Length: 296
Image 1 (cartoon, rainbow, N blue to C red):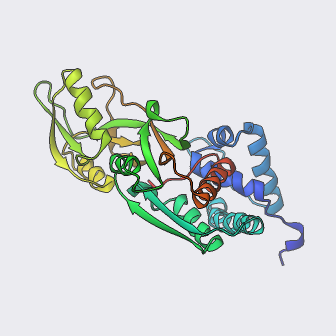
Image 2 (image 1 turned 180 degrees about the horizontal axis):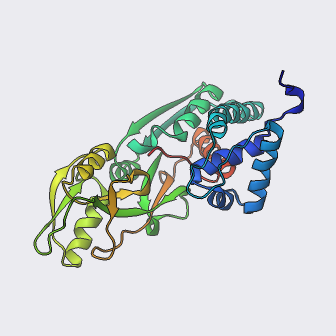
Image 3 (image 1 turned 30 degrees about the vertical axis):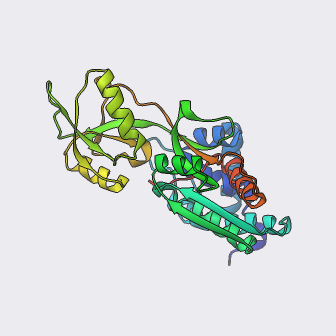
């Protein structure tokens, strides 16, 4: 019989374990959490000793987590969710009001959904209306005062001092291994729709560099662009989360894309105590996990 009294699931160790999954390794997780690599490794090792099993594979070329580690990750997410919600419930204040919030499609199925669900449970008197649009559309809605805040993508050089940075990503030119690019003439381009700032940057920079991009496929979702790349229909701009093994990163022949940043951006002159609380909860999530997890 397992002696449960002698075993402990330490909260900080579980948080480190989730950070390793989110950031893709111990070194990156340590950097994101503001800890040394040895400190993170020590937390995991102590957890392994307590549980009597290994959670991480430490052999080169192996997957990051053992079977036990993968099983524990699911429990860790649920345990930490309840832990954090319980702490927030003890310090909550009576809030009422409305929040008009904008999200991009790729942030709707992420940790943000969990944060928003928790926020509604803790503050039932606050009405949150969410609109899902492309980043450029949400920026315009912010300028017109149609929404109070939005979680959007911007290029790194566009981040404002008042933005709350959620995470950073690299953007890449990609193609399928079987696609041969023409040496002369237009390059087939797989594009998001007219309201995509990737597209606008690509077409503008292409003209400046003397590169002709011919849009042969247009789709508003990342899943559609990924499918078109895998069908060897053309080249595309995709973030690292959407890269697949059969894709090849194009380097050298095209201008390097600028890095991407996900931010919370508030409308100008917006005064909303409920929104202040929501932003603080999002900011707290980032500090605990070293960033915000987005689905691939």
